[in-house]
Length: 87
Image (cartoon, rainbow, N blue to C red; front, side, top):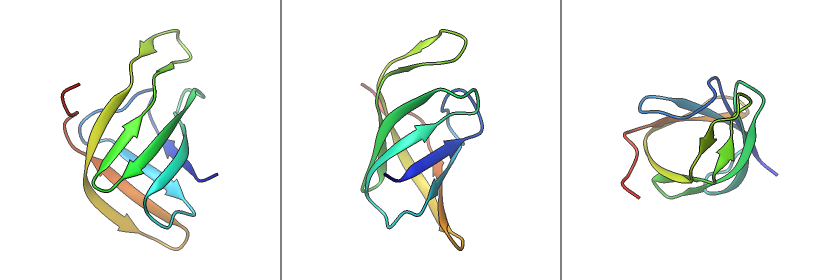
């Protein structure tokens, strides 16, 4: 499965997700900087993220984030997120 790395324990406007070996849309395993993980999916211009619990015990509900920028390097795609979409 494709994996994505986030430097922080949660997502926010302006956060970057580094997606390894991605061809574009589809499911991925998202790894946060604190070691917590969750499932997510790139669906066109949005990133849908399942609910998860941070390493500190904070429960984060499922959220959908717009992708405002995509860029590619050798073996990864970087996603930059916009403001969270309303639930």
